[in-house]
Image (cartoon, rainbow, N blue to C red; front, side, top):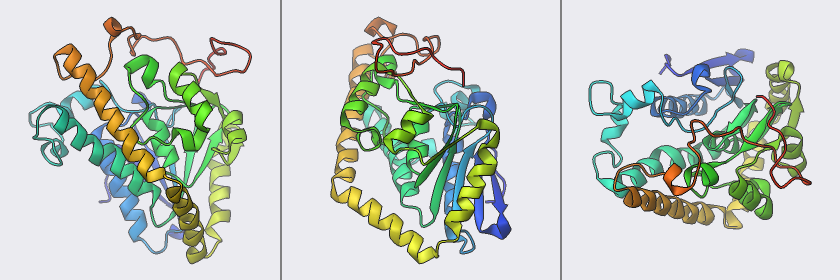
Length: 306
């Protein structure tokens, strides 16, 4: 596929480096189904191309990705029955009912694709800026390396705001550490790029204006590594994490995620699988900005504009 609606596919350095750019800046690159399907096709395209050594995943505009799309007009059109419905809502469990439909659809389009991208047969670098929230973390965590702008903030506020226990690809304890993961999930607070670097989640931090150029420089250095050595390194690290229980933890956390969806849908007597204001959470559309987690303030630090 050469034409995309929701992203750009750029070949750099005679095809040795590919830059995939999420291109929904007006929606802060929220992940609707069309974008996720195109992203999978773009990753597969880069994987098949033997000239490609490194894939950069970036986001257009001020925000890398604000998470799952929960309400844009495109999202509503592609989910509702009719001529504009995305075809993936009729397969992979899309025609099943209630919790079974939701579980199968999220399994295929949220968790399994992220796992597949994590194991892509190329070295991948996430180039992130602004708010990397909730499912935005999933895209960044699927990459082998993360390069962040100095304005980047990372958070998964789905617990305090939506009544969840974290997004479908539950990498939080592995990326943040167990206790920091609990704090960030229970408070919904964010960490900034410097803290993410200190935790080892982020490899490099650059000024926002320099981010694309410096990320490309980093990719060029990685691209110099022989491909078999690069993939051997990637697999050695990924398999070590898997041996420590990563894949089992993902499966267990996904089951908990689906249980909470089913709880809220049953409680509301509807298909809305998230907590609402009546359940004690703020309306996610009008909730206050996410605060920074700081060591000497219970309520978090002041939010910084993305």
